[in-house]
Image 1 (cartoon, one colour):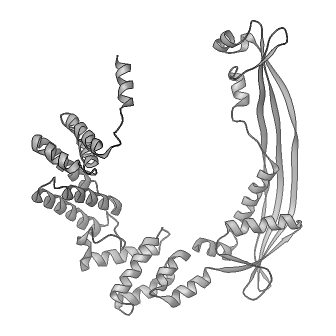
Image 2 (image 1 turned 60 degrees about the vertical axis):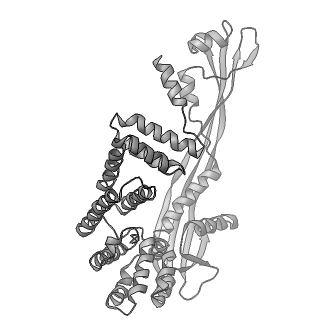
Length: 412
């Protein structure tokens, strides 16, 4: 009976109809109130409030079950106390606004929650325990719009942009701040002095250009490297393949067709490329009936029949070596040897069958025993084409070690 009850419970699903869904969550909240599950009750009330008819149903529940209101308020207070980041702060505000819009909290209750959140935001920003920056939504968090807190947000944003952190939203926010205070203001000039230290990506320079076009243009120029590629000891197809991979994987490089001023020459010399394909070998594996799993042997195999299949093995490997050299203004600026071996074994099982003592054969659609499972599990195919891609990946890693290429790649 217990198992049947669990199966029936697992089949219960949330209704698709919005009105039915609102009532379903309210009813489940009523059922779990007595259990003291604040998190469950609170989330069910929120889910109901998100439906068109939910606010009315929740207000009716609060009127008939006053304890539900207290539990929901406790749930929202826990959201405030759990705020540890800008994202969780905005989530808490969104939950408050949902409750306020549905009029399920009194003005006094809502004001108390908002004050509790404001105090946490203010303390977190001052102490640095919550890392708000200029991208924080001050429409949702007006307490951060005061001069004191704006100054903290500016300093934190400047520090973030000088560190190796994702910063796209912060860059846009900083430029909006400059537009507000003016480029010629004290902070505007200080920010301009710090721009060379900031780790802008190419996509972020569009925002920077709105306030500091000269700097953005120069940084954009620095973020692009003109490179002429020379591939030695390889045929035309191989050279084209190398260039195609580098175009795809190496960012910030303009691959030019000729030498010229301000052009870095990248020489890739193939000094070893031994490709070997191992001939496939086929081995017939046979199990007597007593070696086959008991259930399958009894149900699926005639008396004294045998289980057979073919194990096909093969493989491929490439022993490779390249010399990566970079030249600038006739002088060698970098050289690295990229070498190694890639390869593996191909293995697959085919033609599983049952053969009776009279020679009759039927297909077998099951794994005979643990030995077959070990031999046939994880069947793999290794091809020369796939290994060539692995070699190109290793070559790209070597090219990305060339200092000027490494710099522009990181900026993109």
